[in-house]
Length: 435
Image (cartoon, rainbow, N blue to C red):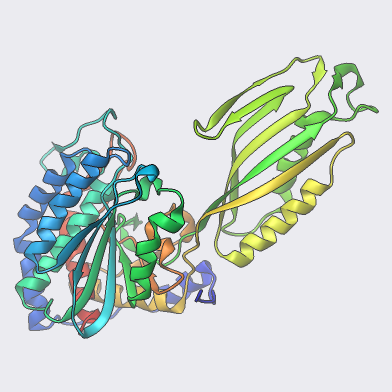
């Protein structure tokens, strides 16, 4: 059942930031966990390189499966049962890796990562390259999110080495299509949702974002959606524009979009008309994400097609925005009319008391390890992510992975030391949640 949003992001962040974590000594077991993470840091870099040297663009199905096999081997060493979940062939997606460890102790955890990257087999840029003195590595998906996957392995390995994985209930799911989720999502994310319903807490390992030198974690993400605006008008000679012949489709589209900009305004709500086609002959190709348009300057345009992104914090905000947009569309200029249709994509990850409590525990663990406190990242600072499919069901925290820059570009890089920091925080968090 969807949990009610009781805090706005701004208020929740402000409330949390007024209560910084108090430093406390680590227990002897926790000290051993930290030591195990640090002792394995060199091997963590080796694992990252192994996975990064395999191209795993979403549509490179063999590459995605090969990266999955690399991580499956690591989980099996730690006593997890692994399985590969295939997707139907017509979805053209590789599938997902799941690793399970059964037990009866503590919270039931679901750890989320992804195997695919935005870089297909013919993408420019190196697969792996150590930079400078070796503090950074550049490569396809090293930060988003093979570095985060390595954080999961490093943290679980440290726990296993000190016996702290015994009798815990932990499931890991690394999806093969996070960067371009297969359609229908009711199929590609069905297993993830079912796993969430059998868990208490979800932790996501997208990259850690720093804000003025302070690490952050994600307690909320905006939903992603879209709208299609179709405008029709009477075609005629341009000498009659503004007269009985009407204003044409282009002016009507401009009126609607500018009214959206001026009148549909709320914190956290954005919409971006990324493609507009207008004229007397318009054709849009959904598969290619583009189209063609033709017309003449002495002819009043009869058609405009607009494709727009839409992002919102929660369903109440979505409903308000859509209602106002429909009202604006209905107020057509003479000789023109329009229709608007909305499509949801990723559900919102609402900021909830449970998510904020998870952040508090995570921040305390970081502080106790001497790594500083963790701030809440505004929902507007994140794009879409897999954790949004499970957040309506269980308490969730994201952004626990490695730090870097240039994600989704040939300059993508990861700070190698951040893998150790993130693994220490994660291992302590898991340890405390499963006691």
